[in-house]
Length: 368
Image (cartoon, rainbow, N blue to C red; front, side, top):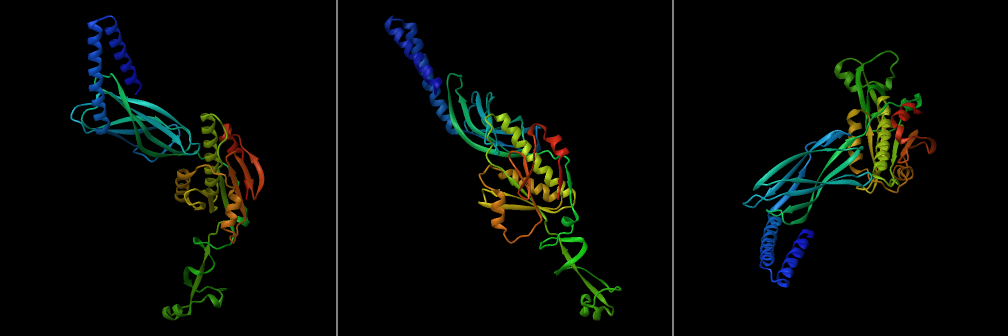
């Protein structure tokens, strides 16, 4: 729109000078520019109607700092090729809601559908939304341009770094007994609702454990062993509130360190064969959401779910969790907040430095 106003001013000046000084050359230039402006506006209106752009990111997960290929598709339904086209690409991390934009130019967009590939470097863990916000279309002679809004985006998960941490598990946690829907594959237990195995009778087996019907069928004494529920003695609570830093770079560092610490603690518990719940306040669910982590598969399921909706909220996760699961019994809760403060059972343990998060995690000692 600004370019159109500038050309209109030039045309007006040409006519003014041509009439003022009776200069046919200036009048001719004014007429020529006016006609060219009119044809360019008609062309651009046609282009605005017939051209659209889309964005697609082939991968859904990557590491911080690694270049990611982004495909931009421009569809030109017109018969003739268009002049220069610029698209505005914005990269926003949902953790701090700030992002960077850049204009990318494409020359001579032919009729039909054209695919262009660019590289973008995504910094900081979290869910990155890569979106097309505007398209700027230039006239064939490059005299003027018009903008139109675009509303297409694709998301990429940037995985946090997992560092080593000294998490020690006590026998009380390892032998914790409680109700659960998951059972131990290697040890029998006390839950009569689930069968661990049926085996031959051994000395010192209780008579109550003999499966009499099966023993009669097998013509031998058979014993039914109950299963051992793998209850979660530990709950990892993630409390993310709005980041207060003013600069984008500072927010990227804080958000990345917070996610690195959360992922490191969960992985350390999993590595110690300690099943645990990871819980947070979900805006989508409008309440507490939790995921049980037992192995690497469930660990990455937790990361995938949390990164997609890790939007800062003013919620006290420990209080909310106790309201929703007031009848649940566990031994320890570990809380991490956006300031990298660590709490165990409501008591402050330590605060980590986001600039030295790797060294701080390696020095961390947590006894559960």
